[in-house]
Image (cartoon, rainbow, N blue to C red; front, side, top):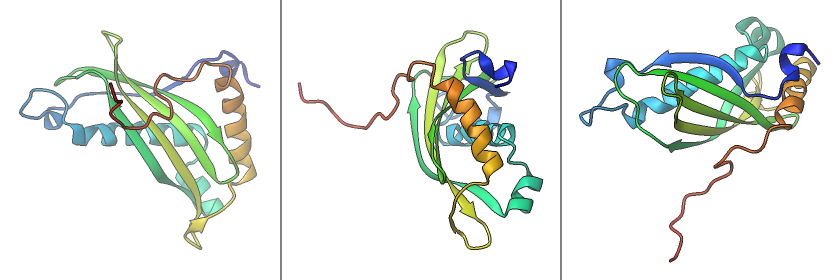
Length: 164
């Protein structure tokens, strides 16, 4: 295991700020732009895993979203700096379960979370297929470190109103 991965902590691979076009009439980031911001964090994670355009072309593989669960925790406003933390929760030969957190970068509060499941797709068949070994090896390396962390608060959360 590389030294960079030996310390059990989430990956910090993406940062941005709230863009003016993302702000709604309430003066905060509109809910429609959270998936876009988390998409960019997912793209950064994919590149970190080695899923470059060259890799995808060579292996005829891609990652497709299967499930996404967003939780809005605290508002962010125009121009607020954002940083994203990412974790590999679990994986098998065809799926990856991962977690992102959006933090206000200077005030350091949790603004939102995004839990996702992605599927590995054979792009020639357009069907779910086993991941290439090199991708599985990289996932295992990162997952082995991330399993040392406590589960994130809200992982696997379902939407419901509890009876009083």
